[in-house]
Amino acid sequence: MLELKNIEKFYNAGTVNEMCLFEDFNLSIADGQFVSVVGSNGSGKTSMLNIICGSIPLDRGRILIGGQDITRMPEHRRQRRIGRVYQNPAMGTCPSMTILENMSLADNKGKPFNLRPGTNRQRIDYYRESLRSLGLGLEDKLHVKVGVLSGGQRQAMALLMSTMTPIEFLILDEHTAALDPKTAETIMELTDKIVREKHLTTIMVTHNLRYAVEYGDRLLMMHQGTIVMDHAGEEKKALKIDHILEKFNAISIECGN
Image (cartoon, rainbow, N blue to C red; front, side, top):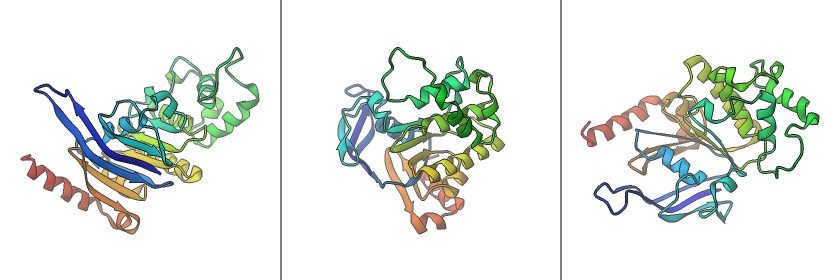
């Protein structure tokens, strides 16, 4: 279980530009849940992901995974337990390295690097079969540099690479936003397949309300650092896009937009 307890985060503290993003923010996510998170720009969605991953520090509060307090754990150590796919396909792969080299790096995540070859030739068949599961023909391009691949191919690789080693959480930060509609559909289908097969606890931030409704078993809406909608299980299944739009519109009116 992931627990955020009494989280506080201020930007520009002590200045005239001080902004409170989170104040006494609490959230629990059960093992195996696939949570979709929606909300307007500035609602705190990505900042929440950065707090979980350790990219930005807390001012107050605690973060627990499986009961273990990781609040002070550095980002690089958290990455052994958390896989993350970013909005920009270029952030999840190394363009100057081949597909094989990228797969080898991901395969060695969290392991010590000694004076030995970076690629384990005995694992090549495993990499090829893993890539074949994507259905994009990448298994026949092991020695092609990742920089020449399309954005969708790179994002599919980033998704696969982030889940190659055993992880406890998968973080998806608007991972289809930079893709064309057809490719985004492919990536979402792959996402659902990987999450289900590996039983991953997953948090997906998205601006695509249809994806938020169709995928996952829990939906959160955030606004100004608070959770204003939280539906899971049968309630989540009964949700329609119109319900979410109605809430968005109500918030916009309250804010004077």
